[in-house]
Length: 119
Image (tube, rainbow, N blue to C red):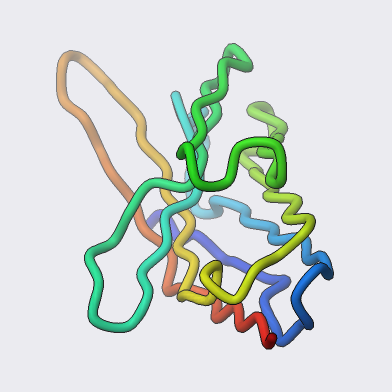
């Protein structure tokens, strides 16, 4: 059973930084992509950043230049370095992973980690 285990959330003042980590355990297969989504109260879950096993990255416009996604595909890990945090970054951040095998996509989600940015 694949599990995504997140760590690194917390409370930080505006302008501060946090680093989120996520590891996919319980599988011998390499994930094709991993990344982060977030959901603020009363809002839909949205993409933050993703990275493929080949190293290609994708970022939401709202966090470009402030957040950096990185990972180790061989270890099924992904990180999110968040700098210059703003109160509007407050949300539950979810780790996401996807693997495609024989045309079937398998998607996995972590339980989420709270990030709170105070003004």
